[in-house]
Image (cartoon, rainbow, N blue to C red):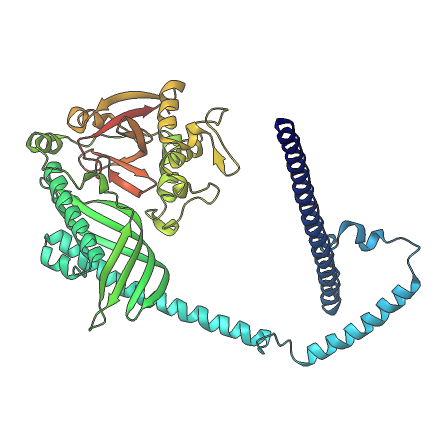
Length: 472
């Protein structure tokens, strides 16, 4: 009986092994079939693609011949370039191509008879005329909104001068969240300017704005999205020098949504721009009595500049971006790439000023080539380190504003102010002038500034300053 059971077990094992082999073979066959199907489909698709490609090549040839133009080599597969056809090609094909060419020429004549009509039934002349009309309408719209924006910003500037919160609020749709945020931001800026002018011992006299509209797009009924560049001039005088006026300029890029009111006025529902005062809007009131008294007591020094310093200052003022003076307003030097989209253009511009002065030559460490520069040229931290380590600059003072503001009067045109935040240099600017009290004024990119008091917008207690003399 036991032998019989063992025999049955052996037979079952053999059957199981056989079944496994059959299953494995079946799976292998299915995989092979699948692979064959995939390859077959790829072959079909490849042939179809080749057929379509050949059709497009022939069609392009026909189009080129209709226009009387020969295709460039780039329009042909390498083995089918016209200059590389073998001499053994059939003359029948040449005859056929000649006949095809005649038919194409006839078709070309027919096309000309229709006065170059396109797929939409319009001639090229009609399309050009429509494009011209559209461009003219867009120009009129930009001009119209430039005037409206000018009035809007003039009202806002007057509110800031008069510290009129009611007028300021009326410019914004504060029922909307973004409109309320925009109003609150501008209200904080108004308070900061009041705070800074108290520390400085000055009164702001005028704030004037020049607007350049880049784009206007209707987003909803009576709601428009606008992109514009804004150049704003601030005029101030010291309280003990009321007859002497100082002016600086700030250039900003704005994206805002506005709605048209019942009387045709604009109301801001959303606004974003590169605010130069952003690092100072959370300030507590500065304890400024001693600082104000010291600033009021300083007499502006006589400044003698070398030819290189003068050349550097002229370059800085000419190419200060949106804040640039004269006919170059709203422009930078196109020979250099604007690095604002890549993190900031301040060090790049400071390096340009030094190089274009004619005093400092490029080298392996400090260099600009093509459309990029070395770290020492384009990075604020790298630029500051290079200036001090190379001997091209020397440190005048370093510290918080209250610690070094007296030392700042040793700055002269061409010198550098570096701004440190959270242990890193985040911005650099170039001294290009002094106001009527000898207070250093800086010019820089991002945000674009022209002859702006060196600490304005940088009054946060977390910020330290590095005052660097450049060895012209």
